[in-house]
Image (tube, rainbow, N blue to C red; front, side):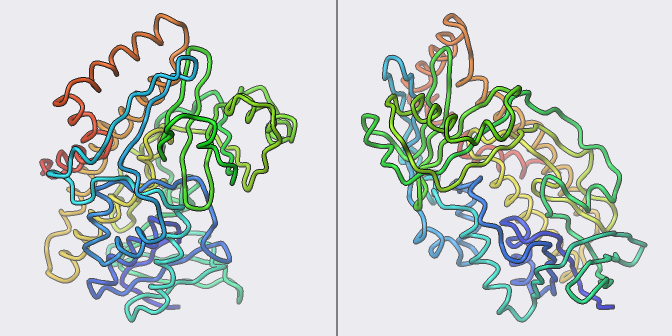
Length: 398
């Protein structure tokens, strides 16, 4: 039985980041991960400007930027007419320390942090360690873990659940995960095909739609990533079949051509937020606490913002004897951002590009044309999409 100051379940980007934030403050952390290593998940690949500012305070931005692609421009495209509405974060260089999105696979970030944690004097990271049960009392937490050497119990002052959408920690708490699941499935494809050759002046971040169809094109250093909705009545085996993949690429690229893929991933998309992120000494962050659709790249970033906020408050509580009431403020701030901004914005993003019917579609695009053509509205829109405004709102919540 081993005691640690803080135990963290999950070694994804959010779990490793909160661990590093705490370790850098001299707080002993133990990270428990059920997998053999950091997953090579291609799902998230966007780091927004405020996230990069947080990373920079810990010396993490520069090495991550070196592994990624700077994407100051994002585009909305009408496929049928080839109309493009372009937004350039460079216009916000007076407001943003990093006036661009960084396109970089999330596993590169998690691996970089895992390597730093393995060498950190205040951190330990254990793979092949699956959390089974959690409990707490008024002085600490207890975590029962399946390890390569059998069942073992770890004890800590706090437990942070950063173990994803299927969080064992959240389930052990027995709390509601309110929200809904979209009826359609989503298919993500990764390919080394030169997708930019099929479109005029394609940016690294693109949302493409017309009244009958929509898809997302994102460039990461290793590949292009394509996100398309799939009818719910299709079987998973049929969705990832070569026949359907060929059909998807024909629909996206406009040509009947065999295209090789690196990854083919199906997933369901949810809009959910827990009723509370703090449960005495057990705390939830990232996908264990909230889920949203991927349009806008807000999911992983909001989890990293959870991690930053929580780590700063735990540092004050542990190192400077501040009141544990700060955890209540963390809960109020982050859930307000999730409910009032992230959930609303991602739902709106999806509606904008999926709107069917000529009249509804044109109405949505007329609104976007007005925003893009007006400098003040355009800048405000980019401050929203870059998550800058959401963090300002967070600071205003006591």
